[in-house]
Amino acid sequence: MFSQLRRAAVVVATGVLLSGAALHGGAQAAPTTTDEAPSAQLATLREAASTSGKFIGTAVADHRLSDATYSGIAAREFSSVTAENVMKWESIQPQRGSFNWAGPDRLMQFAQANDQQVYGHTLVWHSQMPGWLANGNFGATEMNQIMNTHISTVMGRYQGQINRWDVVNEAFNEDGTLRNSKWLQVLGRDYIANAFRAARAADPDAKLFINDYNTDGINAKSTGLYNLVRDLRAQGVPIDGVGFQSHLILDQLPSDYQANLQRFADLGVEVVVTELDIRMQMPSDAAKLERQSQQFARVVQACLNVSRCSGVTVWGFSDRDSWVPGTFPGEGAALPYDDNYQPKPAYNGILTAFGGDPGGGDPGPGPGPGADCTAAYQVANRWNAGSVVDVRVTARQALNGWAVTFTLPAGESVTSHWNTQLTQSGTTVTARNVAHNATIPAGGTLNFGFQTNSGAVYSAPVVSLNGTACTAATG
Image (cartoon, rainbow, N blue to C red):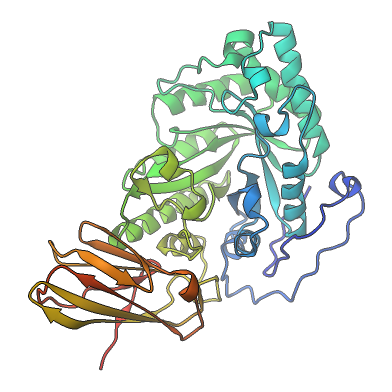
């Protein structure tokens, strides 16, 4: 199994894939590391989580691993990684008996190079099936053989290297009955027990999970799941854990979230928060981001309070890569980094809940949670039908991409702008960098301007940089 030690400095895997021998248990060169940072700083998520014996994980998008900024954050901040898509059936076995290992092997290489656990996702699921499986006319005997062969082949390749597997994913309806999937239609409810038994045979050391969404509070769906886990374990079925996806909505975190985790833990199973994000109606603003930060912290605290909760995984870490906007139109901003890979208040909420110190080090890239900035908002010219505004923001730490937000008086609209990509929703204005001014050095200043349709006199608004309110410049 991968070492669970947390390094303060990690290595981002690049270049040629590891050989088959390395991926399958052969000798490997130890990754190069720098000296460890003082543990008292607890400046990264993985450092902070490790002090409580928990892991902090993220789903990893395969196509982003070649991006140095993305891979740097994934390596530095997280002690566990989950394949977002490359281990799902349509990706890993697109044709019957033909397996595509390129994406999974890249994830394994990345995790090994950065001393991370791997969470396997997923083996038996009704969705993202390849066409040959979804449309095939199989009897029960053949369907069971297909399932068992897939499980034994995939788990067998990575035996001893993947810590946890989502063996069965999203098996329930909202009313607590079993989903009428192809698996249920052909194999009956025994497919779940059979899948877990096949998984145990394929890798006796891996922890085997059943995973679902909308089971975060005590409700009909989570109770159906609870009863199934209780009954199957009583029959000797090797279910080791339950995953709670926790795709949450801002201000709708169930009040019995921790109690729900605890009742499953009381069955003797491990519990994990597997796909955490907290979406909101767009546009975001400072108040929403602060409440989101508090709610991320509450989820982490619930896990800390349940001894059998082993960790928390966010479903991606940057809004740029989130599944939310494409699935829930008008909603977004669900993750701890913004779409420029800058940490948001939610990052700080997770870090402090784990006992970390936002001032303990550089969470980079960007100003980091809690870092300060100074903003000058000046109406440079005003006339009856309009005004010209100049905005200058000085950041304490270096920026690699930025977003500045503020509000205008009701009825005032931006008619043109320069040195920025600018959008307006109601009274909220969001200005983002363009190519030539994305990179700002530590202590440097970004500036942009815009023209409005009104010459009204008003006080300078609060200006926020990457979700953090700036101090107003004086003089």
